[in-house]
Image (cartoon, rainbow, N blue to C red; front, side):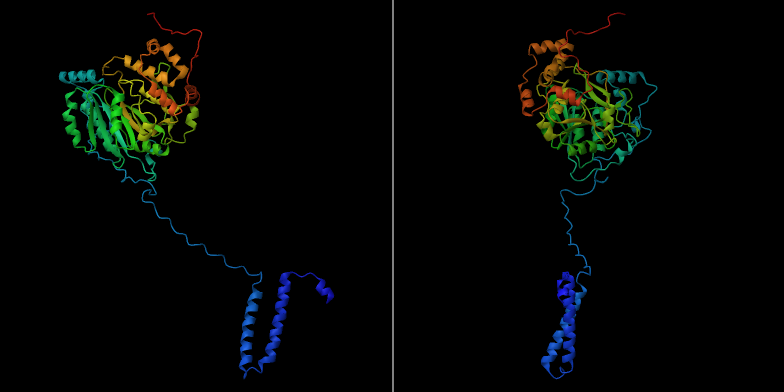
Length: 503
């Protein structure tokens, strides 16, 4: 017994041993009282309690450490209620139906499906009409006037990922006001631009089209135009009675626009399938992005629309030279590698400035346009530098395609001559380019003289804007945004130009 007690026993064994002794005692008790309980209620009650105890002990013994209990059932999860202001899923085609359905098309009509206008034999009267139109507008007005205002551009030939892309309902795509500035524009090109927007823009996204007249004198652009667009409901005409130019006209349109996004177009454009949604979707993703469509050509001679090709990839981006002139260049190979497909934006150092979308709030935050610039010229380069240096970004969205009539020269005169362009360029150089402005002045002696004589107007508001927005310097722009740029010496020992004077 002493040896037995000295042995170490686990709690489980002790419990089993105690249970066994208890069971034996109950059995003995049952045998002792079983025969005498029939006539004694007290004994019968004791037996009943004994039977219940036996059952409890058996269950306890059987379940000590040997049985695995059932897992707890998961709690009932309540399905979250859907926010009606932020629906799930993607926009359907029916939800993105255009504001105005395109009427049935005659495939044999002049210029149908974006094809070139062809007319082999012309009368003398028609030749004269064509020549007059070319002189007046620097494009073939004769061809444009004979092409339907609602002409189709044929099938959607964008890359597959563009055609198949879907857009989420939440956050929702914003509404946009399309602003089109015109000055003595041809009736057919202006109205074809308007109809093109109406036929290709989802009704739920197109808030309005604002036509801003920069003091046109052509009779067809007065009451006749106002009466015509009245039937289009969401199109209206506002006017500058004095010729002030593109910059002021766009500011007028922006000031009355009701859309969340401002979309600027020229007055001789045609929009391709699905052009608007990629621009608006990118602004939802990045509110500081200023986004341009992929601009394709509408031939100025026969109005053929240069349609996108399924297998093509974005090729161009904007640049500038040291004469502060905008131009195009191939996308660097390193930049191409960053893009998975054509739904990805192309970062661009500068933009053409004629066709783009921007959040209205951001447009106002970033300083709209320099309202002391005059008429036209330099405003796109100024805005390019300002957006990048002040925290935004310029991008081209290849899935958004808009055609534009590129003219070889301007048909318009400038009230103060081309000097206004130089003045605009000096203003942007003085505000945004720091010491690099001297490279521009070495290239443009008229600008250098204007700068030295301070004949470019008051720039204090723009300088204050740069300080308030804590914008980066031009060295940062060249190093970060446009490292591929050729940068001449800031302080060369000698400078000049080479020109050919021989025969």
